[in-house]
Length: 252
Image 1 (spheres, rainbow, N blue to C red):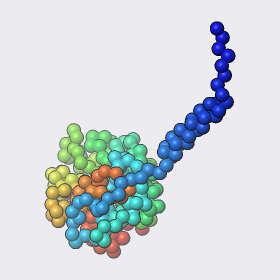
Image 2 (image 1 turned 180 degrees about the horizontal axis):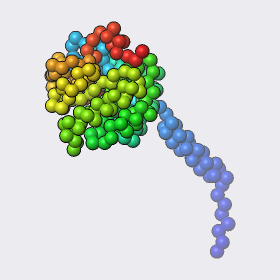
Image 3 (image 1 turned 90 degrees about the horizontal axis):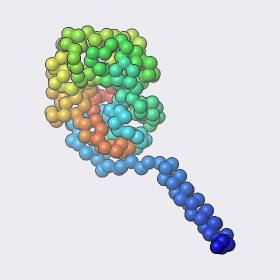
Image 4 (image 1 turned 30 degrees about the vertical axis):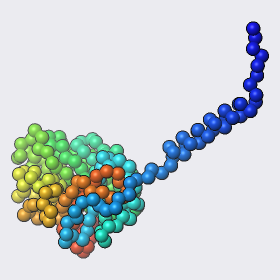
């Protein structure tokens, strides 16, 4: 038997309105600004006697609200600089480099870029990877060579390759790069071979200094700090000097 029943027109109207409301809700939440966590403090013991503080980031920190980072202040401390991962090896580019680079600078932070060195890969190609991506300007920090692993290289070969990367990048930007490494790796493989280069040491054990007698300008003292604008942990650093010394480090 045929069913000649017809649904009332208002059923279609209600269905349409419900679907429209669902669509608008989905659109709003998918396009609404992401709200990062707010912290009561930096969550770590900040080293005494240092005036200039900063962080370093990569894609591991995911989305960053750089305005929140630059505006956070706790115990009269504000972050003034950030190093941002740019490249790795001969062809890798950090997926968040360009957004971090532009937004951190726009927020008023002094910025610097670093390259993660893969021991055993062609050092000149690694340098060219960095140079092709990073456009340094006046008042930016010098480029950074991050070396933490010897891989399959010999100590002699590693030193040779690092020097080639450093001289290639120095020639491109006309400023000596900074060498970053943890204190143990630096003392074992690098100390005495790069005395002409500024050094950035990572050491999370000593509460007052980076634990090396060699000349250093930056100390990464924690990898578990917190700052508004970044969800989760972030590396914290201090500069070894006053504002005059810090400004003299920047690209002219």
